[in-house]
Image (cartoon, rainbow, N blue to C red):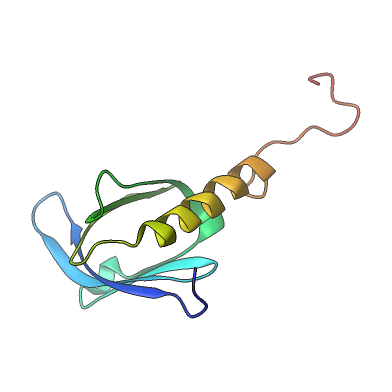
Length: 109
């Protein structure tokens, strides 16, 4: 992923309707900026539970609290998506995001 990130014009889907904004992909976070003040978000990658894309103009991102679905105005570079995906799932496996880890005396080894 390039330093300084990538910015994409997107439509955030709501149950009824949606709002337009920008999704910035940075080294350690995703930022969604919109005129719809209640929908502005900054997510650290370690807060993201899952990330998916069924095609290059779609992105679904889930945290412990919410799921955001974006329709992208231009396709997401596969290299950017792959890099983001690897970071999110590598963090999950390493226990950084709050996975329970046993101490050395834990009987569940």
